[in-house]
Image (cartoon, rainbow, N blue to C red; front, top):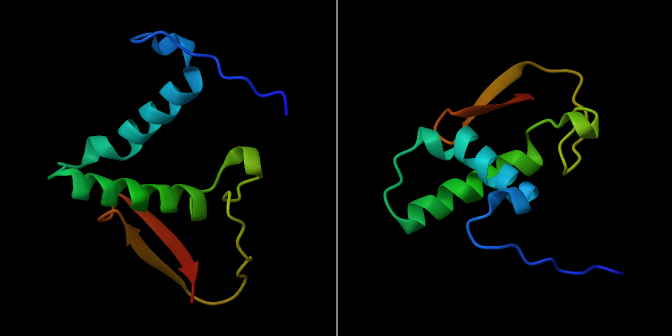
Length: 94
């Protein structure tokens, strides 16, 4: 495939912009809003955020769809389901 690793120097965030962008987004959009009570709690928060990010959240680059495609719901009343204690919400038709 022609993929090669490119090691980065320690404490040099400008050398790995993709990882820094991801870490910053997770911190700003999720972790800055919680008091983490331990490793298990942190893992649960990150797992729930990853599920929200990949299954529910819309992405502009994907034409306002989620990375995991979902079916379009056209009829029914709209219900709100809180995610991460109400930090985010998932709106679905019932």
